[in-house]
Amino acid sequence: SGTSSPPKGPEHLRFVCLSDTHGQHRELSSRLPPGDVLLHGGDFSNDGSLEEVMDFAAWLRSLPYRHKVLIAGNHELTFDQSYGGDRVKDSTAANSVRSAFLKSFNSSHDGITYLEDEELMICGVRIYGSPWQPEFLDWAFNMPRGAIREKWKAIPSNVD
Image 1: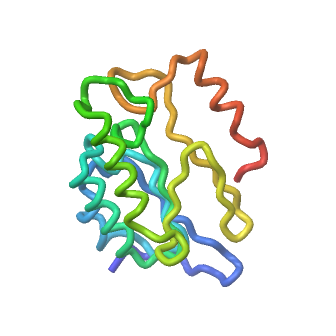
Image 2: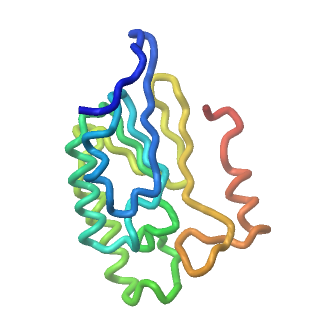
């Protein structure tokens, strides 16, 4: 039934942040503290396979948080539409995994928002999500250090 958290006043917004669950998200369910916003900062899967992605989507829909914000990580290979590495053999299948995930929830009903180089405001708090990282081996959302500066410059200066 979650971990204990300090009392929260009605004017406060409580974020629960996690990342790098790599397919082990269901093991966390009973340990997640209460909150208003669940923010997953990426690497919810090992390689972005359809089975992993859809299981994560079902788990996310089941959680009691009013808002659930997701940003892909470098292990979500099928979410990176520019990925050309050897870890995904069929780019058509990869596109269908991303599409199936996004179609599996209704953001207004489930409270789930996937951010990829975009901003979301929740109760006056501005969140910007971007999955890009400096090149690292053969993973998703890699960019050379010089080129990634342009992605980082696109992040609004006034996000929270």
